[in-house]
Amino acid sequence: MLGSTTIEPIGILSSPFKQKFSIPRQPNLAPAAKGTITLCDGYNSPEMVRDLETFSHLWLLFGFHENASKGWQPLVRPPRLGGNKKTGVLATRSTFRPNGLGMSVVKLERVITDNNNVCIAISGMDLLDGTPIFDIKPYISYSDAIEADCGFAPDAPNLKAVAFSSAASDFINNNTLPDEFESLVIQILAQDPRPAYKQQKDDDKTYSVHLYDYDIHWRVIGDKINVINIEAI
Image (cartoon, rainbow, N blue to C red; front, side):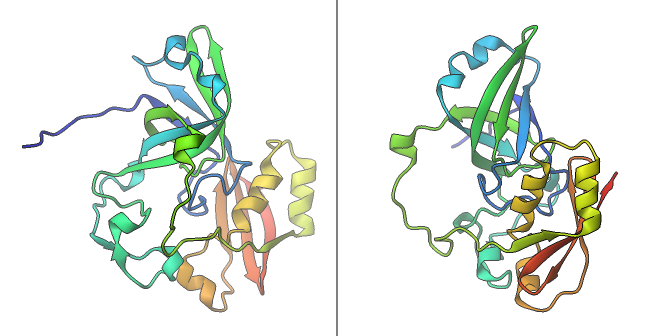
């Protein structure tokens, strides 16, 4: 008989994604997304990360912390199937899972050690700000990168063109923003973060994406994403 196991975070992620809406559905689709993992007490030691920088990419094992109280179902509606067809949860990367665990491959930017406090700078993540990190492992290309059948998700998503209004461009040009801010906005919105069923019909709704401390307001016109304006929160 199997026993239960209790795990606790070894680190907490700081991410530009402040809400679940607009987070890329897979890692490395938005390489301009940069963040840091701060190791928790009991794990915050330079010895934990010795030689970590000899690897370029990392596996993160994490928890879908905002879904913990919402439960899960054996059938889900993946966006790749239009958001209407149901399929088994274990055949998807749904965030609503039996144990609420996920894994992502991210790029390691650098390890920062300051007075024995350790932060791990990463990029290309698809994770919400405040995500608990349960484990970190090096990505090994000869064993982890394999030829594989990818079911109903064989290709990367189609991208839309992204245009900025004069008001949005003025905001970017006249404010001190993260260096990768404009690139991140383009990479996120080009994937059209709307629900899958919304992407199949005309939609005149204005949407908002919360990145860093800013709200980006945008609409879809034809095949183009139009950034209407940007506001500091």
